[in-house]
Structure formats: structure tokens, C-alpha cells
Image 1: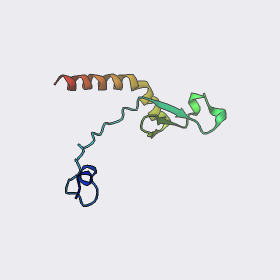
Image 2: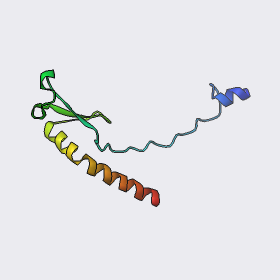
Image 3: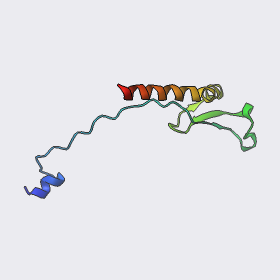
Image 4: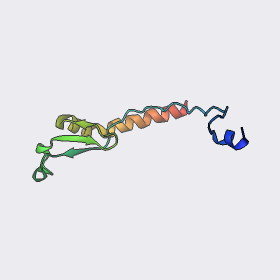
Length: 90
């Protein structure tokens, strides 16, 4: 087996691939929810919103859930930022 085969991990190589650290899952704060309407004629009418979609993760929410998420987004993001800063200070 040649040096280049070992270097590039070609078949027959005794070298094992380096294990990547596990990815950390972060819960989406749903800070960017946008309204969706069933009809183009309904666009802009808040009482006719059919659903809300999170632009970050693609999750769909009912009109009531979306309105609640939109109203409290700034508070949720502020809390997450405070938690992040605490974690960095440890």
C-alpha cells in the first residue's frame, strides 16, 4: 500500500476516518414567521390569514399560533441571547 493511498483513504487503507463530533441540535425560536393566504385577493388582510410559516425551519402554524409567535418573538429572542451570553461566561 502506497503513501498516497493511506493519505487519501483509498480502499485497503488501514487508516480509519476521523470521527466528526456530533452536531448540536438547537431549537428554532421561530422568530421569523410570515403569513400565508389561500388566495391572492386575500393578501394583506390579517383576518384572512390561513397559516404562518417559520422562514428559518419551515414549520407551519395556525393563524392563532402564528399571531402569538409573532407578538412574542422579540421577547423569546432576547431570552435566548441572554442564555447564550451566560453560557459563554461559564
